[in-house]
Amino acid sequence: MASVNRLLATKGFDLMTVDEVAADVGIAKASLYKHFASKEALAAAAMVRILEVALALVATLQADNTQDAFDKLKSVARWALQTQLAGEMPSLPAQNSTLRNALMVDRGYVDRLIELSDRLGEWISAAQSSGRLSRALPPEVVLYTLYARACDPVPGVLRAGGSYDDEQLIEWVLSTCFDGLAAR
Amino acid sequence: MASVNRLLATKGFDLMTVDEVAADVGIAKASLYKHFASKEALAAAAMVRILEVALALVATLQADNTQDAFDKLKSVARWALQTQLAGEMPSLPAQNSTLRNALMVDRGYVDRLIELSDRLGEWISAAQSSGRLSRALPPEVVLYTLYARACDPVPGVLRAGGSYDDEQLIEWVLSTCFDGLAAR
DNA sequence: GTCTATAAGAGGATAGAC
DNA sequence: GTCTATCCTCTTATAGAC
Image (cartoon, rainbow over all chains, first blue to last red; front, side):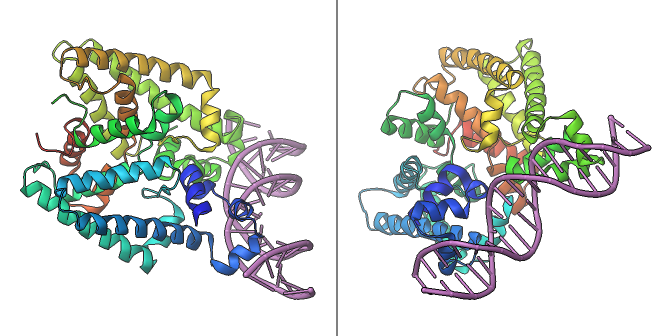
């Protein structure tokens, strides 16, 4: 799973080959196919794994009284960016690819994605009510934006081209996301 | 080129097959290879074409005295989102793939990308000086963020899932980009 | 559960006629 | 410039022994 997540993060689903995964794990490809029915199933398992981690983080944050809903959303976004820079955030396909279809019929994946969306949705509503999150945006728009930013290519590009440390870089990307490009 | 741009936009480079392009154009695959040396060259030509359009837009905006630098950046972003929703914005690969390497040695592509970046960079500096664009962000971060938003998957997802018209949807995405998710 | 070997097919690219 | 036919490599997936 760790190998798959890393390869999925760096190359994406289509460019990741099962041979590569097998080589990285150190077993034969046929052995891998004894555990996973297909390449899609392999990727789906990796996606489920990262969703589990996300759900665990959300559960921890829910018990935290020192942060309000807005801060919690930001904490989740920060974790996503950190995970992405660590090469552990599989980049999911936007609309294309066979993977998308395979994931959408995978109960384990869909159920967890819905659960995560529900939890985040509650925080979005709360943060809009409290006035910290923009009320001009439909909750749907906020949710999809957060999902998209979790796979944002910007941190990777900045790290590759730049002389900034990861900490600084993540704060800037978080700022573009929550504060926007315009001055405040 | 139009076919390639559309296919590149919907499926991405890796999932787009030369057979598909040929079929879409209505000629044999071998005929296509008489005009373009490789699949990479085909995609590069499409990328150059969209960069040309972008540069033309920038040139037009430069002559416009009714908008300041900040507004011009926003206009470019709006055009990018419209083009993307029209299925004419090829989605470039972030860091992975053979395409990236092929593009980076393609003089026609690199020269135009640098020119575009220079033009946008001037507006970014000006907009920061005038105080409309955040001074807390390095110009580099702003530029990469704008490029990334031009290929943002959010508008496509929102359109697929939603009952909003394109106009409204683009304004929301522009808002998340320039104003951020946080309330102002 | 792991392996070697191989099937099956997709897809990039080319040969060579017209 | 366009076509048909073909090559060849890469990749997913399976057969079957140990």
